[in-house]
Amino acid sequence: MRTTGIGLTSFSIVGFVATLSGCNMDARWTQTSVQPGGLTPEEKAAQLASESQTDISVATAQEVDLVETTLDYRARYKESLDHLRKYYEAHGYVNKANWAAFELEGLRRVKQFRYLLDAEVPSDALRPTERIYEANEIYEKARELMRSGGHGVPMVYRRDRMLEAAKLFRELIERFPDSDKIDDAAFYCGEIHKEYLPGQDEIAVRWYERVWTWNPETEYPARFQAATVYDYRLHDRVRALELYQAAIEHESQHTGNAGAAARRIRQLTGTPNAP
Image (cartoon, rainbow, N blue to C red):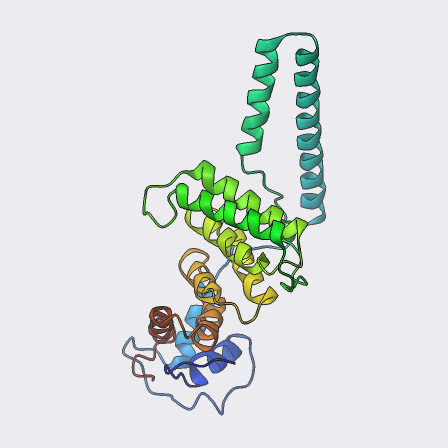
């Protein structure tokens, strides 16, 4: 396990999270002095736990039924429209065939959700073990779409190209689940859902989590990116703290992120003088 020069005591995460979960951590919670905000660490932890709320929920049976019906109708609509296009082409109705083709192209460009979070990302059991030429080609094409779509340029990007890139990354993972590019593709799927597709934070963190699940030694700052989403957008500060600590431990090569993670941990735990 890689470490960083930024050292944090077990109080900052282990004690904090365990206290929120109701564990007996009296040996670790030895500091009882009042913090600058007027709260002890225990009180600060309780307050933070009450503020930590996430929109990620478990699907009900009714939701599953509704989603399956929607996906079935969607597939049948697309198939029917394609049959209509072929009919017009076969009978010489050029304009109408073009209309149907245009509508089909519009469907291809629209982001089609699977709605159940477990279905939005592939299994966590995949492992990037093989170097596959075809997968590398898809990966490079998707990365080029991101670059041409304005990746990294604030406020200037083309969402259609980002959607195309995300589809290619997913295609890579689904067609070549053993490719050594699946964790790379997962990271950029997380980036696209986080930065360019509003309201898709739950999907973004799932993609980031797949990065280090598939490749624990990943070079990407997936833990830190997920931590910021949990922290500032989903307001799940407990999970954010866990991931900030994990970023410090596993992503030390990203020194700026490690420093930011350490500062945020001190802010959230109310321990401004902690190392």
